[in-house]
Image 1: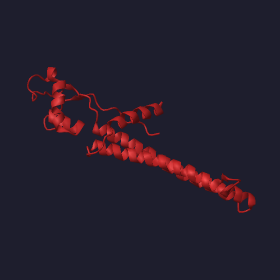
Image 2: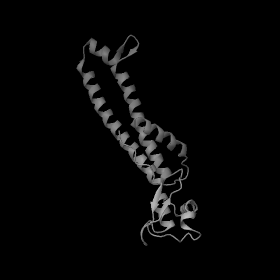
Image 3: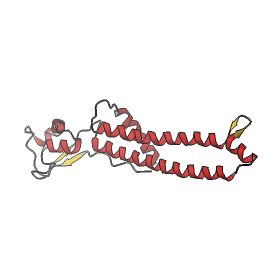
Image 4: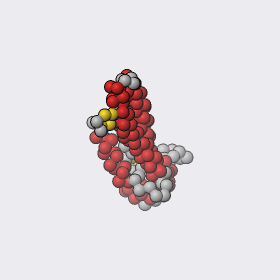
Length: 178
């Protein structure tokens, strides 16, 4: 299983002029991908910065306000899910090959036909394997689709309502890691 990425940062240190973390706008753009978030960072650090939002000094440690959507983190989770979907797909291909080898083992006699096609109203290998493989394929597709949706959310595409999905997936992935 692909490990979860580290949690979004909670603090940032102000860096020298003309670097990504030298201004509140730069910090907001780099960490939130939204320069307008500078106001939130300023409000969370007004006691440290003072009354002038431009009063940053190199080395200041600023608290980062939490956000429901941290784009870089969301993309990392999407990448982990995409990797998991790929691993599931690879395992599916191996399982399909193994099942096909078992199915071919029985040959074309009466017993082999019953095994492959089924008998007495019960499905055989052909139907059962197809159902199982369809289910696993759907599961792998689910991973890839969720990864794509998370990327859309991180990129702020209109029509993505994934905040609750992120919370649920994050809890599920953390539980699976343990």
